[in-house]
Image 1: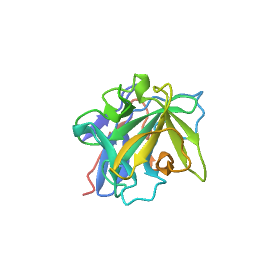
Image 2: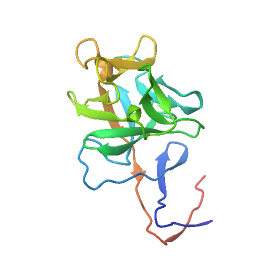
Image 3: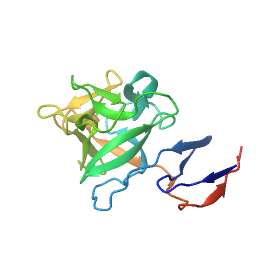
Image 4: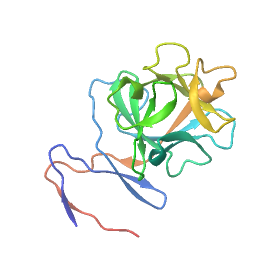
Length: 193
């Protein structure tokens, strides 16, 4: 099989346990500065002590919740928007919305596009390698992405300290190949399975 990479097309592959998942191209910004790499893939784990501590997306159900391990459904691609502000795209084979967002009722959900402010998150250091994700769509009150361990769900918290340890997230970057081909290159792919 031969693939010709076009001017704007790039092929990115994420090597995962048991297979290879194709990823979409990322928008790259040269003037960006923030704690995460633009276009890089992460798994996110909450600081809250719980068996289900990994952020998971279920695009077919438009649900974001917690799971027990960092396997399928727990991969997120960070897209840089502005200094320290990102959108997070769920990497999943399921069909449906895949952008981490807050709806009009301030509920954490998935939406079909990253163009609205409801899908934008400010990432800031909290402590010991943990970060908070602050929704920039919510003007006041609870704005931080928070793991609700009692219900295995997500919500928004006012602060990331005290009883809100679920509002602290650790990002684990996943091994990925970024832009391995140039415009016009001809490549061949062979299945290793």
